[in-house]
Image (cartoon, rainbow, N blue to C red; front, side):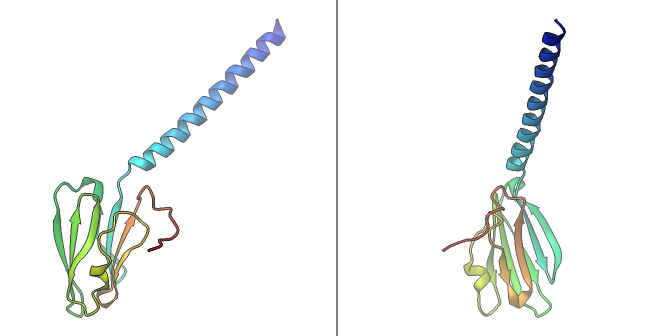
Length: 130
């Protein structure tokens, strides 16, 4: 009888441990998937704006002027962000278009502006091929 009791106790403890670990793993996975992507807008390395793109309900625009007088118009919509217009000479930031994940930032070198998306569900992608 003592061996059966020890065996049953072992299986109950093992089952409880597996159940606990499975629950913790599920919380970790699903919490990461539901967390919204945050767009951080930096100028000269300083974060000017931090925008949770999953909470944006209506589109809007921000104007960011640099020390050189260059102006970037940043458009924000639900789930995505872009540099819509810029007075910089090369327009690389404008041509990059909308971003919605952490794969590649939008950069305007003349205005020292960087838009990075963090906490995106697919932010662990290493490269983009176009």
